[in-house]
Length: 120
Image 1 (cartoon, rainbow, N blue to C red):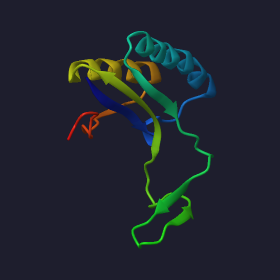
Image 2 (cartoon, rainbow, N blue to C red; image 1 turned 180 degrees about the vertical axis):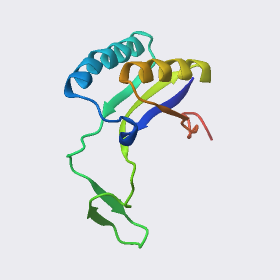
Image 3 (cartoon, helix red, strand yellow; image 1 turned 30 degrees about the vertical axis):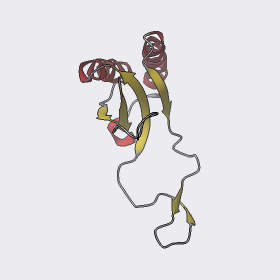
């Protein structure tokens, strides 16, 4: 099994009416429910555009917290889903279902394998 990150940048969403967005919510929740039923769900969520944003940086040797994004950028993460699946084909399938439900593109990346219990 491998964990895959399925995510989108907020700028990929496009301009839509409030009614259009309200219609997409149930579709996206249905896909999340389907992922859960398949036993592949790890996490899913959208980020608040107006929520707190801050950075933590210890590269100078002293921990510094800064309000706002770390770098100025035209793109930012809008939401993400993490699935734990047997193969890339299954990750593609879930990304496709999410893209269809949301109505905007999704990008997929596999998490690297970190230390596992029993590794020496």
